[in-house]
Image 1: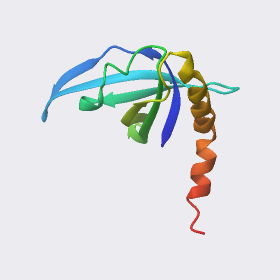
Image 2: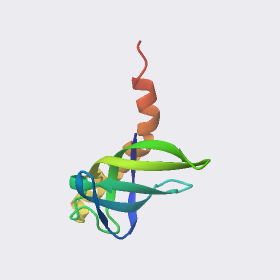
Image 3: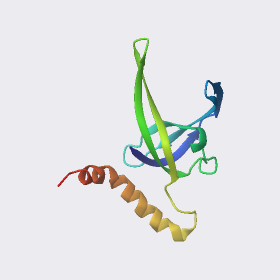
Image 4: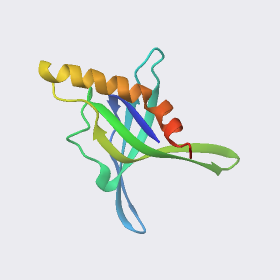
Length: 120
């Protein structure tokens, strides 16, 4: 799955020691665009954490997996990123039009994905 939006919050970096060595987890809050914006908490693990991209206000495109698991009769859902890319161009006025075009394309992508999946 893929989601584009603006980084609105960066939660504290979490680290720890597991049976396979040290681990790092960075959770971010991404806000979607559109008439009804949604905020989504996404976890980025290990080497996929790129602090240069993770600045408040940056527009990102995140590819992720969703997984739920049961613990003591309750279900918990994780949204884990496997790829994080910058969604927009630079801050100069020359890049404003392409960034807007890309936003419009990103907003239309979910419909295009379903149409492209058809075998005929």
